[in-house]
Length: 189
Image (cartoon, rainbow, N blue to C red):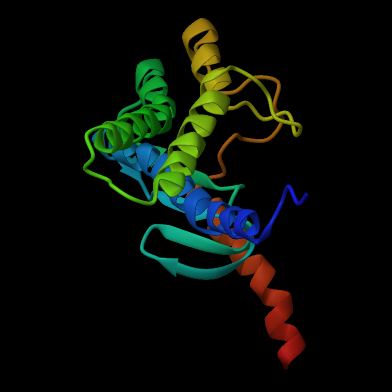
């Protein structure tokens, strides 16, 4: 008896390379929406890690897997503890709204067919909500959104017990990209 067949493999590939990148993009877009409301300067959504593949406007797509993605910016026009709470709550709320909307569309037969696709999509939407809302630190010591929100409300600061900034600024990221590109250009000459 085969428990993981070809159809399961195709489902895995669809989940990993179609659904997850879309869910990550939706999540990161929540930051942008909130940031725009509070005068964000130089916003950027970075999808993946490693060398840059392409940059289109504020979207920066990297070579390696998309699960490690982030939103960065240089500064905010308006700053307060509650503005930061709103910005870090935005991806959670964005995923909740998208998940509930999709669920309602499925229940009301607006999205008919491809039920396993939409079930997985909604699953990953709420997967990110769960790991965003429960306050915790990642293996590298950086706080997730839940921890940032908790610390901002309780202590009035963005990060705690983390030697490096939670989010690199967009300008710092661009400098890093330029520095990565220099050795590659020198090798060609």
